[in-house]
Length: 612
Image 1 (spheres, rainbow, N blue to C red):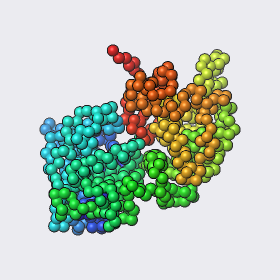
Image 2: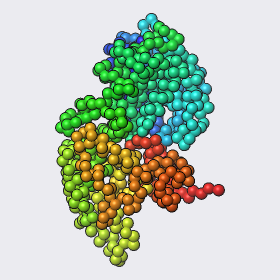
Image 3: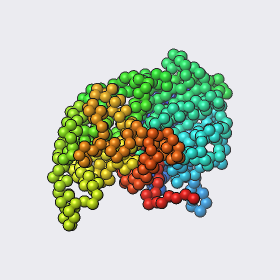
Image 4: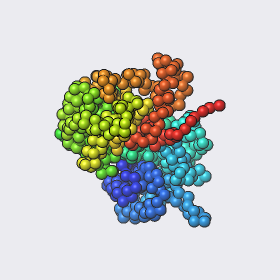
């Protein structure tokens, strides 16, 4: 039996476009004599559709999508089964409906439906808001034909496997309410199909791989795990669909190698072809994997072929060069790839073709500029240098050097006149000076915000905010100033990771970022000789504390592992709590850590937390 995992990038709400994409992949699979083609969770409507699911027109149109897919399969003239994630609803009494996150198993003769059993409602997930869990439905294996042979498949949907053997600890990131392990109740003897819209964050790939390996080994069945790829607002789906065999030997293009996992490309659309010998039931038998869009690429965890590029900035960004990434650099590769995909899809889906950002000469704006260049090309990016009286000459030389290296448009405009005009206007009421020095300091980034937003409005460009997660955590940023933007590219990237990204980019992309931007002490340059360390601990000390606080680690435990005085830890906690109003008004940011300041974090702004 030949199975294809179609790792596609659907657009949320685009039923017409997603239907065409699914039909295209079915056609390709049929041409390659596949018997089964598998699509991700909610492939028809895109994930997460959120409150679009309250639109009755979407549900009615979705019924037409399923009808058109069934008709399309009947017209192919080849026996092929498509497993497609989509929406399903059952009519109840009194005009009510039970709405489900579903998998449709379709061929030329019939349409079968499997409903999702476990609905996540934590972090970025909110499925109980829209769907009904199918906890009481019987576990019935699905017979799927390949010529004269029949295999007994089981189909699960994403979260259904994440309570396997109740191994996941009940923490703030995982609910304690699941009392069912769907994997344990499966009745089939052939492959286990899992369709997914599983977001990526740092470490998620390894966690997923370990889970699938455990399931395949203990059930002695091949797991076919097909994941969505693409960026939707603050969430990026990484793809890396996997075929996991219980056998220790795979055959890839008839070549044996140690290991039991084959993986599709990460952070790009791909197809993974799997040949399964179903005659060796009850187990699923020998597995041969052919990976890649042209069936010429191979992926596995031991020797990943990674696409890095373009090395030449005037090259076609759609045809990146290929290179091997050193094993120690893979985390940074995935981080960069995730940010690029999130930015690319945000621009594509929202209609932005150009980008503008404030280039300060510092590390954050340099990394933002480099990522924007690698994603859209330097010719579509504008770096605006906006010096003030407190800006050092070296900073603006570094900003200009970045623009030159990235071959992007460069503008320099001194903000002194705008800043002075704002100050005169505000003080005209009779004040001789500001009561707080920070008021004067914040006028500078707010003057920059006015000019950046004006350029964004005038050119129709997406304004990228350049702040990082560490600054956003403690409020070391100016609301309506440097926080201005439509997308916060680094808003979930800790400062120490920003430095890692800069070094990775320079290592693999020819030194786009000026070395001085990396080596000089970070500074907001809003006052004479100002440095970040004047107000904050060193970032290599601050970031672990913030990460521990994000994970709700007890403050007293944090005080034991940090070199900072106890009062300084208490101050950091106070800064974190006081900056909630800033985070609630920040631009959308791309989630790259397990606990991001985005749609998965819902902390009240107006609060007074006390304990008895």
